[in-house]
Amino acid sequence: MPFLSTLRSRAAELKRDILALWFCRNHPRTPWYAKALVAAVVAYAFSPIDLIPDFIPVLGYVDDLIIVPAGIYLALRLIPEDVLAEGRQKADVWIAERRDKPKNYVAAAVIIAIWLAAAWALWLLFV
Image 1 (cartoon, rainbow, N blue to C red):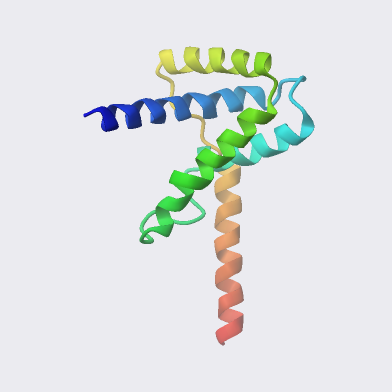
Image 2 (image 1 turned 180 degrees about the horizontal axis):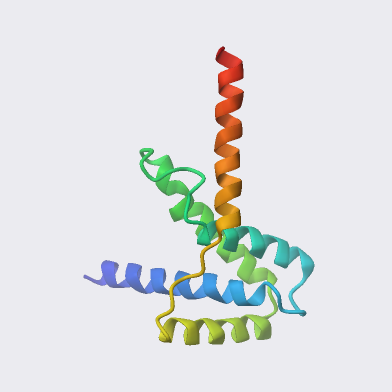
């Protein structure tokens, strides 16, 4: 099935690119605006909690299928090619060593705070 193999290779490429962005986020030649976007995209991608939980029909997968890849795409365009090549090389080594993806608990805490604030606002609105 060519579609399935294409999908798998694209998923592996996205995994490598998000790791490459993680390595590029502190590089001195990465522009500040790219660092800001990379920080947001990487923090969200590595967060163990989604802003929109996957159990919500359709919307739960919008962030995984559209928002995160779009953020990765934009961030990749903002980073200089040589810095990106260095980040991709480091990502390939990371993957070859079969290390787990980094986790970002700060982003998870922010997402939990957003959900709690939304719940509190709804409670105030209806009570």
